Length: 254
Image (cartoon, rainbow, N blue to C red; front, side, top):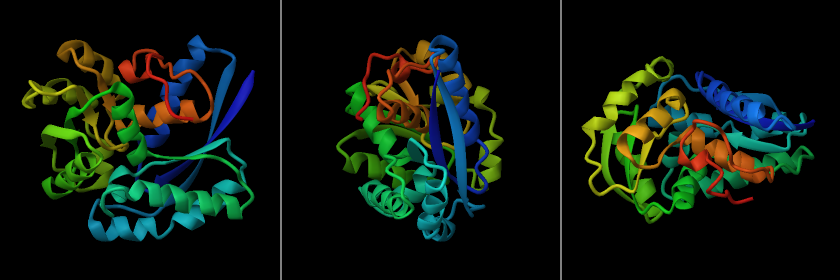
């Protein structure tokens, strides 16, 4: 049995990152019993998904990374996709560098994954050039996400904003509703569907159902982050019933 220690940097009001990622990796343990995953979290204060609170949360990055360094994790994943994307296209590289610097100052050599960077690399791994996107955000923040994705060379053919500003309310959204929400999108030109462009909006239980129904690869910020975590650990990217990205057919960058 090999233990893999995963550090998570999580917004203080996030209830889903520490639910869906562990669930996926527990499901993986059932089919790959030689690996066990252990999670350690550091939190950054944020209650409402507003530009002001997102900036204030980003300012806590060094402290959160330094705290995780003490646990000597094997890899560290940062959770809040929109906090990074709101800083402008390509900012995930800067954010990952800042987390890395904080870890190194605390004596940790762990690689770093951000959910924002993971979503882009997950889309790339699928070979998708055109995607449709569902977010829980207000429309201006959804436009920020769309701009960020398109700056990376991927066309967003349609998007749906559920317009929930309170981050705790986002976590309470029923993922079963995504089984019908996706039908409000025009997927005629899409190569893939991002069912949740937010690690706080629950979607895991709907991923495989929607993929089977729409006939396109379906991913989320959470499944993409898990894909990168497994790649960073040098493990096959297989999680049962979590969509094509985690079928093992699409290797992740180490």
